Length: 242
Length: 297
Image 1: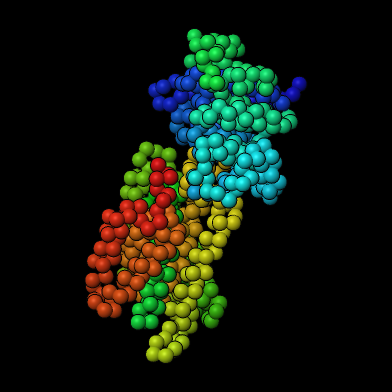
Image 2: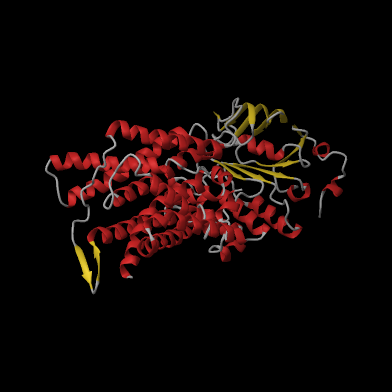
């Protein structure tokens, strides 16, 4: 039996008095690409943030490749994030969090933070450019001057630069024109993750359908296998902005 | 005229190093380090202690000079780490870190002066001339070895630091952290580790400045006050966080000080300097080059 990439048990987390995740369980196996769908405010971003220790507090077990990276924590937001990330988790966070004053090339290179990846950064950059060809022309440009879609590509591209086994991509289509977001999500779903895994949080279910192994619904801080329930009363056609 | 320019360049080199340290610390960890004066003095005393031992051991010449510069930088780097472990690490993820660390560094600065007084007494300590004694004359002006050495060493050291920041992995991480702490965290940059590195580097630059200034003045318990004040003025005028802005502001402040001291009166220097910084902050609130501030928020 292979060790799951991610094994979450009894995970709760939140910010101050607000509890967002409720006793959540989730297992992700090697080679899986998982879609996480749900409406705004139901905890998709919080789940991804909790995995890397970026929420206000958390409780419950998170095993990454069999090693505990969770546990109970009441303060110290983000203090453990760098060490968790270094174990092999790459996050493309909501809001992109790119470095506006650095060039696109430097932004991508910052994703190759370990000594080994840093030495192979040129090759890694080339493979990111294969996924996002529009970035090729923008390498020398300051990231702060990019459009929303280009920023998203830089943010996701930066996550792809690392040696991660688990990729977490938060709302790749958020705020983008439909045409751009379709291309971006399609590109994400075509990336070869090998024995790794990828979680794509996304409101826009049709963007993921047929492209990922599994779709999990998220509703009020709990996971639902029934995707319809996660999207609430709104019919899927209306929830989709296409 | 030429002498004023030389004098301005010397002042700019010395104060610029301190200002870069202040600016750098602010931009990367959001701490306005008022203990920079204490860090400055620490380097001066470290260099002095080394010089005392070295001279009594019969060391002289280039070896002594290199040792004095090295120990000055080391002493201040260690002091920078000490300040970091008191005012940065324990407070870093608390609310209002900026205000708390400001108060903590002010406290370190005040207590630090007393500590030097206890250990070294109130007497001024001279450092041996690092660049030898002599002058190069050209026309009716001239430049002493000390002045020339100060300008060269400060520029080279600053150039090396900037080059390292631009080309290395650690340098990229520091610049990344200045622009987006969350982004830095998700690419594995620890604010705490990187922050301590920043404090050590800022300290080393300040220590270099301390040895250079001691070529003209002495090391004393309060010798860090003036560099701290002028360093703050320069880093504010340059826009906290901007290296090009800080370099320009250092030149401007150096020139203003040299001109004022030469043609008006030395005692008017603080008025002129603060006048300049107030004017800059009125007309360019982010300083000459400070674009980083709105990036952090």
